[in-house]
Amino acid sequence: MGSVQQKNTVWRVRGAYFLSVVSITMILIMLGFIALMLFNAKKLSDYAKKNIGFTVFIQNNTKPSEISRLENALNIAEYSVSAEFVSKEQAALEMKEELGRDFTKVLGYNSLPNSIEVKLKPEYTSEDSINVIKQQLKHFRFIKDIYYQKSLVSFINTNIKKLSVVGLVISVFFLMITINLINNTVRLSIFSKRLLIRTAQLVGATRGFIRRPFIIKSIFSGIISAAISSLIITLTVLVLKENFGDIITLEGILEIDIFIFIFGIIITAVSGKFAVDKYLNLKTDDLHFEY
Image (cartoon, rainbow, N blue to C red; front, side, top):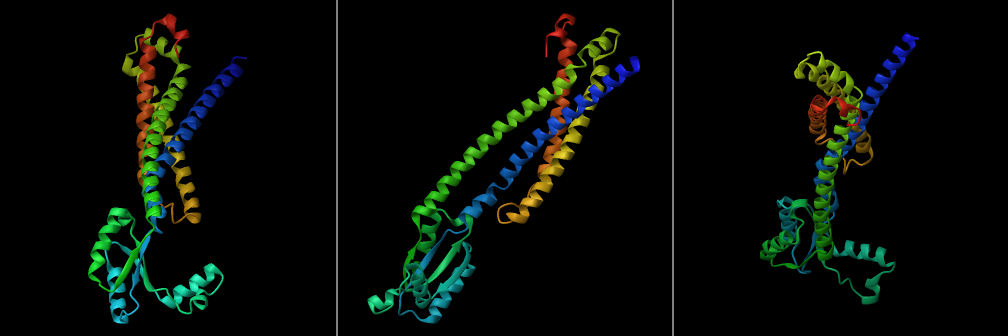
C-alpha cells in the first residue's frame, strides 16, 4: 500500500514538473514570436514601401542620348532601386490594355510622353526625400514633369509609424504578462513544497542550503523550456520563409534564441529565489493560506 502511494506521489510530482515546463515553454514561444515581429518590423516596413517611386516625364524632342544619360544617372543614384525607360509607344499599349480601346485613334496621335519609372529605396520614400530628389533633377532641362502619388506615400508612411508605436506598446505589455506568468508558474511549483521548506528550516538548514535546489530546478526548467521554444520558433520561421520569403527572413533568429535562453534562465532563477524566500519568511500558521 505504501509503495503504491509512493509511486502516486512520484507521478504527481513529475506531472506537476512537466506541466510547469510546458507552461513556461508556451510563454517563451509567445515571447519569441513577439521578438521575431520586432526584428522583422523593418522588413515588413520595407515590403510595404517597395512599390513607392516616381515617374519622370520627358519632353518629346529630347535626344535618345540625353534620355540614356538620365536613365543611367537614376540607376546609379543612391536613392534608386531601379530606373526603367518607358517609351511613349509602350505607354500607349499599356493604356490601351487598361482602357480596353485605342485612345490614339480617337485623338489621331499619341499624346503620351516618354518616361522613366523610378523605384525608391525604403529610406527615401518620405515626401521630404522625394521633394529633395525632385530639386536635384531640375538641372536636366528636358524633364517635363516628375510625378508621384502623394496620397499613397503619405498613407503608407503615416500608418507604418502608427503600427510601429502600437507594436512597441503591445510588446512591452506582453513582456510584462510573460514575466508575471512565468513567476506565477514557478511559484505554483514551489507552493507544493512549502511544508518541506519549513521542515528543513526547523531542523537547522540554512536559507542558502534550502534555496539552492529549488533555484537549480527552476533554472533547469528554464533551460528545457527555452530549448524547446527556440526549436519550435526556428522551425516555424523556416516554414514561413519558404512561403513568405519577401517578408520573413532568418535575420535575428540567433539573437532571439539567445535572448530566450538568457531570459528563461534569469526569470526562472529570480522567480524561484523570491518564491522560496517568501515561504522562508512566512509564519507556520500562514503556510496553509498563502500562495
